[in-house]
Length: 385
Image (cartoon, rainbow, N blue to C red; front, side, top):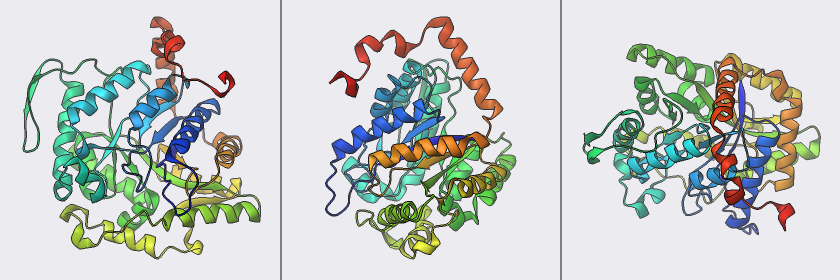
């Protein structure tokens, strides 16, 4: 099972002295640290107007990371596809895949915040239908070998051909799944899927059942299942003081007043499940912070929890270290402790090993794009003043 760094860049709290700009710099440093300590991937959330996060353009941040971090895979968590033209999204992430030597793990979803939709002129009530059609158009941009046309309800394009194409052929998308609608969309294509454990518990009865339901949906659709992934809030705590800090940050995150809870009447018909998720959040207490939602406690306890996640059929877990105003220095230490004390118990999956070997062969034969351009594009480090 692989492990990645994950952030939604939550930064909207009463009296918070940390600016969004400072937090963005911290996140870049944490992503580069993830590469240095051997994490498999970095996942950067997309949120707008700092209601739930302060990074609106994960692709640009990951391009900056890619110029320095040479091995880690690069993923948005996730591109809110209905807010964008899917052709432009296909171009952007194909370009990053090319520049990074095939390291993009593209992920997409439809979001859950009407206030993020409105300024873009996107229709929140039809978000599911827009997402389904947009994902089809994006996929065709990456996979059609020549010019093609597309006519749908929301998108129309004549005689288009994407260039450059992604290095990865195919570049398999990952779909964020809080509902059966999203699960079945991913299953029809054999695309990867990613769950939030607390949502999987609320909606499907747990991670193991969610993975089983996904594989069953793939079988019904006649497709080969992709990878199953999940995210986890995490804090390694070996002392009472560390445990207290972890709980404080987690409860601050879930109680964040910037995270408005819309009523069922405000949600689209295909998003009524969010009422259950919001109810779970409203009722959350410190005693509820178990491994159905978070990883909190000593390293050996976290290892045991993750062994159960592995047994449930998950291929990758992405870990949210920096939530709830956790200090940057603590986040870096937490990441290092996890990779030292927990990750070695989980061998690299054979598919990951083959992918890394193929990428190294490809870069050796033609030269790494990032290394060829590093003299002009590498971001300044602290040692440069």
